[in-house]
Amino acid sequence: MTQTLPRPTSRARSTIPELQERAEKPRRERRRRVLRGAARGAVAAMAMSGMRQLTTALGLVAQVPPELVLKKTAPRTFRRVPVERGPALVETVHWAYGAAGGAVFALLPRAIRTRAWAGPLYGTLFWAGFETVLAPALDLPRHRNTTLERATLLVDHLLYGTVVGAALWPERDRR
Image 1 (cartoon, rainbow, N blue to C red):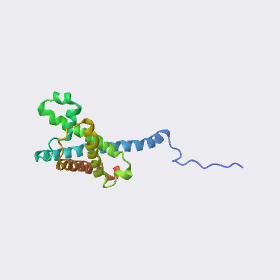
Image 2 (cartoon, rainbow, N blue to C red):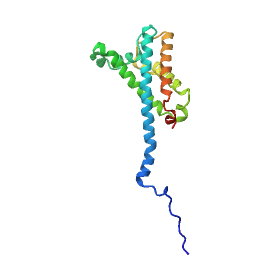
Image 3 (cartoon, rainbow, N blue to C red):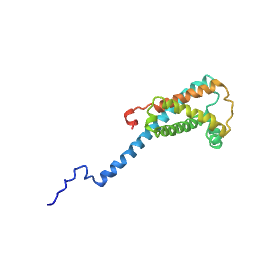
Image 4 (cartoon, rainbow, N blue to C red):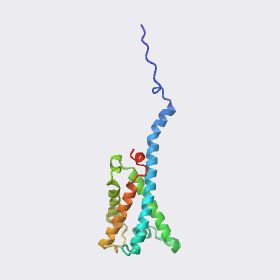
């Protein structure tokens, strides 16, 4: 007596392209999440730029950190740019840096990046990293000694983190 095996279901008859598509889907979703994070990072840096216009106009911040960093790390490039275009160069570099930070935030584990506190904490860590690592490593002028100026820059980075952590499409970014 021969025993017949049940016919495979349509699920079991997956084709190679279907299997490849299933394998590619998580990578595509991750890539989209990172691009959305980069977009939020750029927008967050733009929001910081607006806040810095206010804080420098009020005299709370003497010179913005992106300008200090650019003058220190790329002085020839900065000098080659016409004076009236200097602020545009500083902002463009700052927005690119903000986009990179947003992309990194999007790569954090879901269990962390979906918490309400994650964005503001991330912004605070960015600020702390600048204050404790980047500024000393670049030997940036420490004329930014006032507590008020440092607190203003901390609030600036809290704004950045809040925007980076806010998802316009939360159901997509929760994956």
